[in-house]
Image 1 (cartoon, helix red, strand yellow):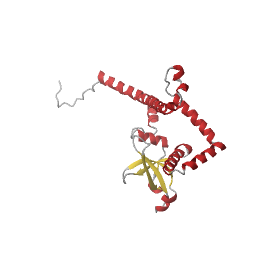
Image 2 (tube, rainbow, N blue to C red):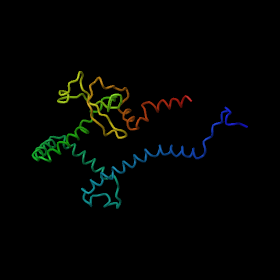
Image 3 (tube, rainbow, N blue to C red):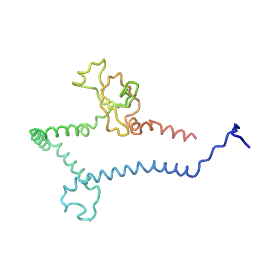
Image 4 (cartoon, rainbow, N blue to C red):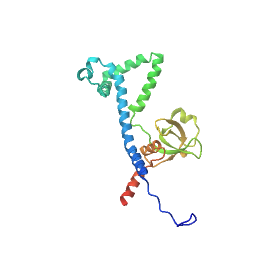
Length: 230
């Protein structure tokens, strides 16, 4: 017989059946959720593209006119083929001449000119200059000193921005992403001495931001090695 004052350690309780079911459910959720979300996003994107492209195709030329079934993704294929053909024509001499003529017409339209130039600049930055990417991941003190945030170094500040700011060293443009959506964030300029470069790759830093600090570079590898040693 023991009393509440005895120091005899009690044997640990074994997890019940409900705890095992709960753990299995959470494990299955971790496996299924990324796959299901990926399939859903691709399916939704295909339907969104189809809703824009297929209305532009005559009804007698659509696949469902012949097979009686609305195949999702046909609009995506048509869009890809059309884009490739347009790009192939645009790279030729005739295509370049047509583009210059069309842009000269657009430049005479006040409102359309502003919209077109803005959209063109964004498209060229994202697609045409795909070889340009973030150089390195870094740490910066933001939004105040003493608080560190992950950022991505893009380029060295040039032109008016570099000339207007009087700093000892050159300015670096740093993109500080938000969590868990790294596509939105803030473009900030820091003196080089205030930027701490990281050894981790940009991809690993992006994973760290998306996971809200739960997934660190090399974490899964070290865990796997530990399991193998056991």
